[in-house]
Image 1 (cartoon, rainbow, N blue to C red):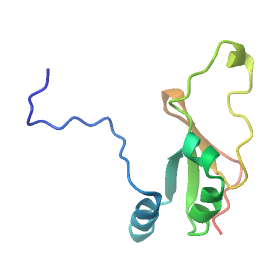
Image 2 (image 1 turned 90 degrees about the vertical axis):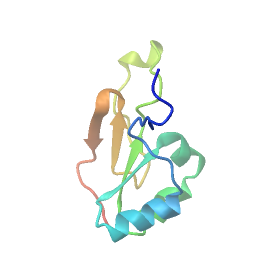
Image 3 (image 1 turned 120 degrees about the vertical axis):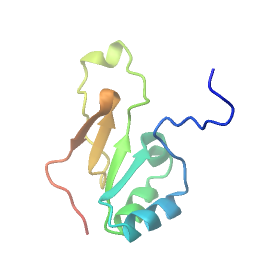
Length: 101
């Protein structure tokens, strides 16, 4: 058991999308990684992030793969505007071209 005065971190951080975009722009970051569930619920979020000139990667690393889908394409076609996907075991795959308009 960890001491009560030690903060444990799993390497992920939750923040508002607006704040994440602001931090990314002000620090010249290439883009953001967003939970795929969030992007599925709010498709307009893709255009909102991309309008700031950022690359957008969807995080599917926490999604469970079923035995039925194990033979399916491990990197299915991404939604319009999403530039890459982060899968389990930290596998990051980008589209052939990245649009940073």
